[in-house]
Length: 392
Image (cartoon, rainbow, N blue to C red; front, side):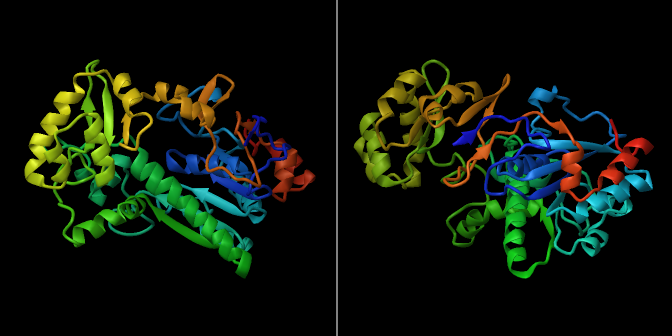
């Protein structure tokens, strides 16, 4: 069950399995903000530090839609001033986790590298996420999801046989290989710290994270069960029983009946000639099988096919748009999408039976209560405000 939006202000008591955990997020783009959002919705108190001199982001969103900032208390600092950097060090001394996604060396140049922070707080877990890792020939290079997938060999594998590779949004390297692997590392380090009392540095790389997601594919290749060519395999549109097909109304259904019994059910309801069922994995039959499936599916609309297969295990689904997905009966029954003001977004996940999460709402300016939770005294807070170190 998801709690009601609470504004995520500094004084709000949050629920979730990470309630009481204190996290510093060094503001940036891409997967680190998603990781911080998820940590916040799992109950952590997240203090997002934004540079007072930062320029406009690539995509500037109104605050009510900006999930890169929801669920946090936000503190704007001039990190070029020694007092600004020193304040981050003071805050980190009272934190459990720090996460940052800058290029290697940026935090060190600011005087905020892991060596000095772990000296002050040996229990701190310092999470670093980059595209290429903290070292290596490409470590200083800029990149995006498509860049990292290209170097990981995965972009080559995504798409159809006779077409260029297709960028899978920014879901694989940024969010899957980046944010999710960073969270896995943070939680593993927390578990180890519970036994040893010691923090550590996590070096998460989006290339390596995306590659790990594809570990089974590498295993299939080594066993001779997967071709290095695009669009020639079971899961990459090579197999006619694992692909999308256009319907009579120019929409699509997704067919994913890999297992023989699921394929037999699909063939029965389509219907498909019986000889295809016995020769499901006979690649010489695949061109004719694909043509037969495509021709049949063209005879009904997407929703007609969805209704026909709805109560079966044929693994056929309507290809929904992002808007349609929010209103599908299953997703509505599960409350898989929730509203926060005018924003409708995916609900916090995963779900916990003993510790419900709190839906992150619009950010709050870090107040005295939040700063004292990170170890600052009332006197220090007052002095920093008077000298202008604390941004507005």
